[in-house]
Structure formats: structure tokens, C-alpha cells
Image 1 (tube, one colour):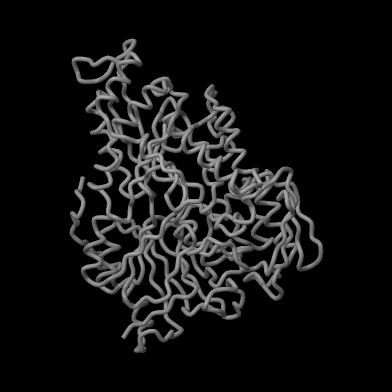
Image 2 (cartoon, rainbow, N blue to C red):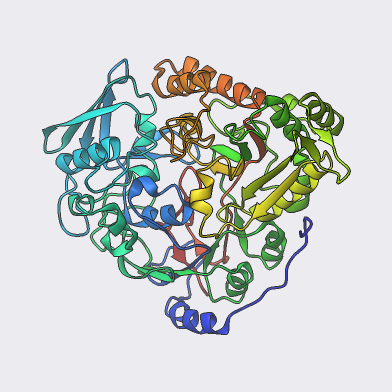
Length: 549
């Protein structure tokens, strides 16, 4: 594993550079610094290909990076203040118990196929996101709780009703999972929405060509005139277009950027940050403001079903060593299951101590005794656990391998399997095969905790009644009641207090070991101006212009 401040050599692909040179040459212009100049094509290198672009699937960052250019949202969450501001909705009202939300829609907004983005279109979007569509296999959005139905009051007014209070809904209208798409898009089956050209949004860019797994070409909409009301830039995007190229190798992305053949890249590894900055290029690391990058246990697996075993592994984990060895100051050590910048954060650092003696004592108490081979044994079984790496998470394989080294000091073996295995998806749903899993999720609202842990959402603990196809026995009713409280408590102070209670409870039960607060790490050439990020780190190229000179 590379230590902190170790920089891998840059490797470049001449074939990639040759293709990029044609595009970047057309965007060169001599300008005065600070004077926006329209035109040019932005070359954006993405580490991974998108999967499905149904907006509620936009939580996967490669998906969100595409959707953020081609869809608008009902509201805009200011990434600095986190306040909810007007966008497609000019204004809104909410009843006191937060079961009814009424939005006034801007006039003149259209999808790129020419159909109006009016109240009926907004209603269809949220009826689909809130209820799903079984016939089309469109799942319910994880950011919408207790949804009942919509009402089109008039062409520019839509009202939403909820079965129970839904205090997170207003913020939920601002997130990537609530990107507005045309009725034609919502008439397609889920499996058809991996094609980027099938997503008809109202955003500042339109997908004109897509080669699945390789590249996407975007063109700016010349008639775009409805960006977030409080942004300095208004009107069409300044760029002519964007060329997104899938470039999995870290060295190739860095090399293309530093050679002037790419303008912006995503997923800059921590060990490459100094190399980028030394050449006067820019590193951006916006916070994801949600559930921290963690290791999570599946209590339905008998090896980790005992609280004492989970607590032992928590105390056998040296998070400071992990952060200092693998990451940079852009990756703060986690002190709770959610980021310190997240709403409702409560510091749990006192419970997250590294203590090998305590870890060994807990394993002894749980009946796991050291064997001659250095492993812990009980009832003829060794304490051997398995986890799959998560490729979207930065240096996740190296992180899990370092955790495996740490756990070996108390007699526990962790096998780390490749994240691209064909069996990974199925195995991950089975606690007997994957008792340990890396996880994180970004969202700037306390509902993000429910999204991570609740059985009907991401169900990271694999509870009974959740995502697993296996027969589950583990269920934590107390945790689930608390999560439902986050989703339905209308008093904001009480809601944040519940969020704090959940953080303490998850750590007390040692369901998760928080490691670091995950940013989204980008690098850009110094001539890239106006690069922005939404509240949880997805890029926005709406106001970008290229000041090459």
C-alpha cells in the first residue's frame, strides 16, 4: 500500500491524448483573466462508467455526474449555506405538520424534446419517484418518505400529500435523485434508462451521443433560461459542450490533465494531490456531508452476531493509522457515522478508541480463543470474515487490506475480494457470504441515515424484510423506530436529537466502524473557471468557461 505522500508515476495513453488534442484545440481562446468567454468543449475524464440514469439511481457518483448536467430540480440547495432556494419552483408553502407541500412552477420551462415542464410533468415525476412503477420496474426513491399522491391545482401549481409527516421532502426535491425528466422518459422501463440518450431532461446540456462504457457527448441548450434563481450566471451554459470520457486508470487521468489534454478529472487519489498542486493545477474535494466511509457488519452472520465480537473489531481498528497512511487532509478522520458537516452530527470519538487489549479481552469474553495458527477459534471454527472492495470508494481495497492487517493482531482474518467479481452483487446481499461491507452515502439532510440503515432503503445491515433474498432473522426494531422518527418528526430540534440518538446507538451496537469523511476529489486545469459542485459534491458545468491563453 502506498504511504501518505507517496506519488505513483504518471502513465499516459497516446491514443487518448491524440483524441483529446483535437477537442481541446478548438476551445483555446486568448482572454483577460476573470472575463467569461463563451465557447469551447470541456474534456472531463470520469473514472467509472455510469450504470442506470433513472434519477433515483443517481446516488452512484458517475450517474449523478451525468444527471447533474442534463436535469434540473424543483429546488436548489445552496452548497455553502445548505438553504433551499428557488429553481424550477418559484415558491412553495408547507403545512404545519409537513404532510402537504405546494409548489408554484416557473413558466416557460421545457424539456429538451420540447414538452413543457409544467405542474402535470412535475406531478408525474414525483408520483413515480414516491410510489415507483412496478410494471416498468422503476423503484421508489430513497429520499422520499411517506408519499401518498399529487394534485395538479393548475398548470403552474402542484400539491403533494403525505400519509405521515415528511420533513425531509423539501430538501429531497433538491437532490440528484429528484432530477426532473420528461413524461416520455418516465414511460420507459428501468432497463432502458442506462442509455444516456434516453434521458430527456430540462437541464443546460443535452446528451447528443453516448457509447456505453466509453464516452458521452453533451451539447449546450441555446434556449436554456431557467437556472437556479440565485446563481450569478443566468441563461445558457457558457460552454458549447462537454466530452465525458471513461478513463479507469488513475495515472492516465492525471497524465492527461497535466499534459493539457483534459480539463477536469474525477477521483484524484490522495497520493496524487501534491503532484497536481505542485504543477499549479487545482484540487477540489467537496464534502459529501452524509454517512461516512465505514466498515459495516451484518449481524445475521453468526461470526459477527455477538455484540462483543463487533465491539472487539471496532477497537482493533486503528482509524488514525488508516487516514494518515492512505489519505490526505481532504479526508478527515470520522468521529461519528455521519460527517461533522452534516446536520445533526454528534461527536462519538470517545467510543471509537483504538485499544488492542480491550479488543482481545472482548474476544476472550465471547469465547473466541487464540489458536496455534494465530487465529481465534470457537466451536471448531476460525474467525475468518470476508468483504468485497467497493470500487467507487477511494482506495477502498487498500483500506480494507490495512484493516485486515490490524485485525490480524487480535487473531481475526479478513479476506478482501475484488470488487469487480461477477458474484459480488449477489454475495453482498447474503450475510453468510459477506459479514463485512464497506459503505457510505452522501446527502445533506438527516434522512441520509435512514437511507443507509432502514430495511426498505439501502438496508446496509441486511435486516429481515430488507433487500436480501435469503431468509433473514436479524431485525433491530429500536433502530428502525428511530430511523422512522428521523423521517417523520416535524420539530426540527427533536428530529436532530433523534439523529444524534441513532449515531450513538449504531456505535454502541458496533454495527459500523466509521473511518473517514469522504469527499469527492476532482482536479482541474488552472484555466477552468466557474467549476461548481452541488451540496454533496457532484460537479456542475453550467457556469464553466475556459480561460486558455
